[in-house]
Image (tube, rainbow, N blue to C red; front, side, top):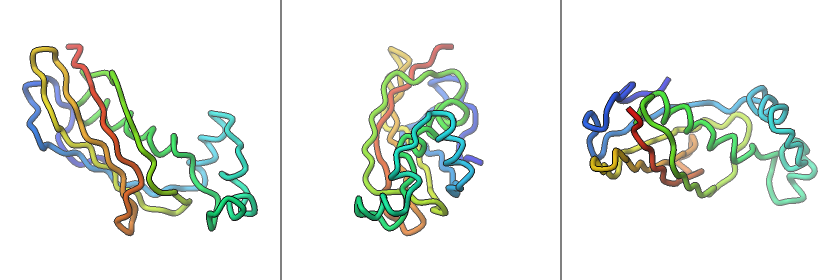
Length: 143
């Protein structure tokens, strides 16, 4: 479960530096469901031999699966259910493997009340403190 300000209802309830964090363990079942949903059967994601050929010790988890968790955090916790994602950027910095523990962080970096917009920094690190993913999102308050 995410830790932070749950269900912000208005832009006025936010503060610069406000953070929400969530910890997840990557499971084989989670990856398999993503493969079934997207049809992405690229061998680097399920073949150890192919992953080794590409320079990884094991199959890597889909980067977009890792990023997709932000949709839930943003819509349910911070900035909350009265927002929609307007723009998002992400940089995938390091591979993720089944069994990794991922720490997701969303932090309010800018509030633009005049246009009901908030910008948030996105970050994912693993159990070893390695930066996996970082980016930024702009969300619009619709209510």
